[in-house]
Length: 428
Image (cartoon, rainbow, N blue to C red):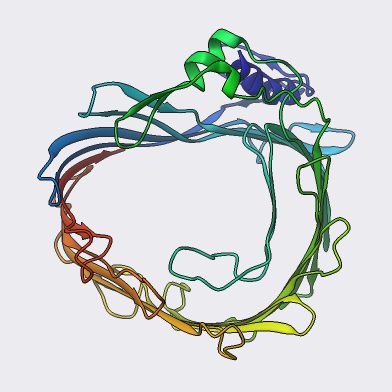
């Protein structure tokens, strides 16, 4: 029932605008026909793999589907006293998977986002909302261990109201930590206490071990953003987030200014701060850097970033990273070649005594539908692993991609001999 309710809320929001419809098209007030636009992207994967540590083998089937339905095209002449009206519904990351371990299926429900535009106003609803303030190093991932200030709230549902009047763009979002109702105990026993893990194992637990997620604390999180276009060469965005009755409810603040110099060099400066309730220290970080485009389509570039993290007074950690990117396939300077070289240095001041570096090198070359590739990541951090991936991708047949690949999470340490896989991917 919850999934149905989450889908009907966006539909009801769009229903705020009165439309007369037949089986094939919408009608505007002047009887002009508007054809809804449907965009579908789908991929079907078949992978055969060998675990070199255990010699286990097997097949995995999975699918990825993205669906976007534009109910009222922006180009239509449908208007109200408040301006043009248009909107869409987007479903992302729907997955169905069955593994050879036990033959059972696993379904990941899609995220649903619906947006309605009425002149300068917009209403957005979504069923997997996240409030996130992280302007410094927003692409923080496994190969970058630099500390980072980020204020993140996850919720069960939410709403964002927006207002755009050039050059200012305002929005106010709210999400609830959980929904308003008790979960059905039978449904909880099935969904929460009978879990198929990624490795195929099944775990069972007592219903009493799973606290109900009813939002009895009335926990909500709020996000306010302000964006300003400063002429044609600069823009500024600022955000404030607050969590009411969340387990941890810091006030998150952040801002970022980006500049364009001759449409080639793009410097930026940003900061994030976090104000925990009752805390004496206010952690914050500041970052700056620039991106220098090496091609007209922005696919080849050099990018450098400098970040300082200040967890408390008198303590700071300085990090720097540099990335050289050659655009994939035919988008870069060299036809068919795609490559990335990234170097990160963390804690240059060594105040924590743990200055580390990390490097990633990746490249591929595609010609006549044949693409050999490799990717290696290594670091001098304590107990660091060296990840390695290499293989061959074949795409001579339209809609079909065949990939032969070897991958190891630690190729030099001997802790992971790796996996060998052969995969078929059908896309449309």
